[in-house]
Length: 369
Image 1: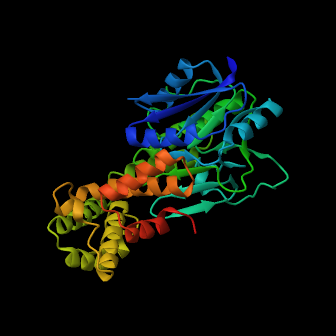
Image 2: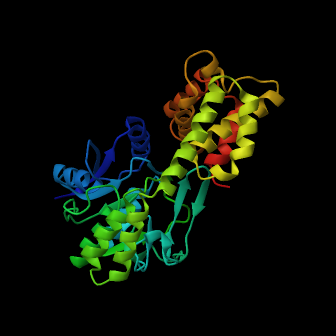
Image 3: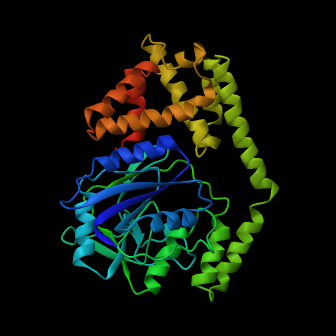
């Protein structure tokens, strides 16, 4: 393997997300003598399958398996992580967030032993430092498992694509494979989060199916939790969960229809009546944000936010993508990216009538307090 090379391996189904991810990779300071490349993996049937394909395409000793919606903010990321690897050959893998002791149920996020740092964006943005702080006089903490949003390795082991044929538990499985081979896993000390994860709503429909697979492979004696997985899987097909999904979809489609017909005041009233039961409905909340911007603009004597719809350029169904793009451009500005990327942001704001009022409202949501 080439000890002076780092490959970023990214499974992608969105060229715009990949493009944004690559922009931040290009801003990283590359240590002298090193080369860096990006390997997009398109059309993978599972994360494990895609990561195996990427691993076999490169001779790089160091590989960064990265979600397409993860943006690396720390420009010295490569120096910081490579120093940990080079000074600690027993460390096989590094992540941004991990747990010092994995819960017996196999869920990394339900354990009060989590450590690391992460800037997370769903509907709002927060900097999370989790449960167990890493002392500032230590460069890293040893953990049992890390989250899959970013997994950097200096050793190669095949991802278990034979078992994990979807998008869940490939990360915890790989942690166990490294442990089986005698390597340790680390999370670095981060004064501020090194990565922003623009995660959006999570699709968990197969989560318990792969949790069961994980437990059967790595904790086969844990029959209590394996049986619990079976119960979760069985309840996922009940009418109740289906009705909830239909209700959420109906709320969104109703709101989109009102906006498309320019019934903005009626749509505002609808959000006020239905927001409490849709607070975890990402699309509903995003549409509500645009209606709030409309209200603020109206009070200021402006009429910008819905012009792309009124002039026929777009429909209300475009607004969630529009919101995502505005957030990405605001992040470029706030993170001081080169001027060419800031120019793209300002051109987008001008083309799609993103007023200062709209920018300020969305900035509150996409930046940490």
